[in-house]
Length: 195
Image 1: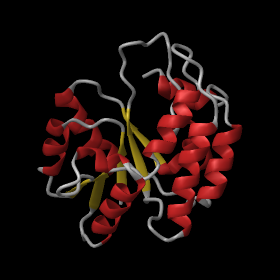
Image 2: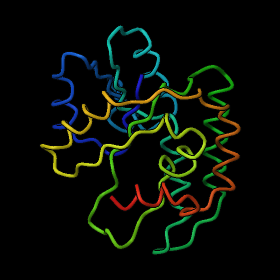
Image 3: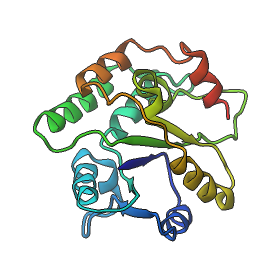
């Protein structure tokens, strides 16, 4: 099972779902709207649906850590009003509570859509490419193409080149790493962010 992290467009998801080796699970729930994909409960439900699918690659377009990632990244934004750690800690607490209650487990892999290349001189902090990748580099892959037509091909190529590696540490350890992680502290992750 692979979580597709980032902001995948409908055209990307439709193109990827046409592959015979890929089964796509979207995060929306009927009646809950698109926003449900960004909630821990919505993503956990998508992961449960995905767990029952037998396919070479099950791609899930919902991330139970999306809110945690968004708040961690917001802490490092230079523009706008500075934000503290309160929102990050709140979202981390929600994700930890859901994980401890058995609502979700981390997927086999995260496949991160590369950040928007509109500001190449200003790399943006990325939870997935920073703290998450630092704990298990082989469990986080990147799809770097920015053009919609090339992005689907890049996602399929990245799926085919996923490397084996140690399993995830506990979510508690990942959150602890995120608390201590400074964007740019890993040279490797910094070069990935600047794609």
